[in-house]
Image (cartoon, rainbow, N blue to C red; front, side):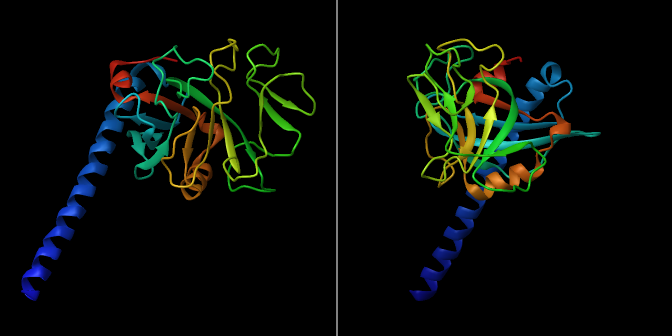
Length: 240
């Protein structure tokens, strides 16, 4: 009986290993298919891409993949990284609105990194966060979806220095920043969560370990962008 139990456990472990491998490979294949679909017309001048997608449009659990452009084409850099997005998933392209708890769909530049630290192992521009740093999310404010320091007359804003570590690394995703359209969503960041796939109010979040890997790899000379959206919408084609 003991020998039989060992055999059962052995085959169960094998099954789990192959199942996990199959899932990872499937997401890598899906990511490559999405990138190939979009890259034909929309990634000129871009040599680094973060791709974030979910399977069901209203699901906050997503996958993040990183790619760089080489002479052989687009090559994956890391294994699939679990990511959290908006609590209500992705908004269809051009349908993101303030307060919907959805992440926007589209292709966006990656901007400045705000951090609690004095130094970060990254080539990307960064700024140490202070208690004066805010991001305005009041649609009635003239500074809507803008970074400000110090006093503001905005009725609503996000402090970039939190009591938690969520914004220990907080990179701006350049959604609705140029031009700014009031009410179309604000404060979309790439930041931290604890487990890698916890939901956000509309941002993209990963674990600290994975964030550090991504930051070390990113290079402003490669014009890094992030592609975001539901798998089916991305496969149907979107543009910058």
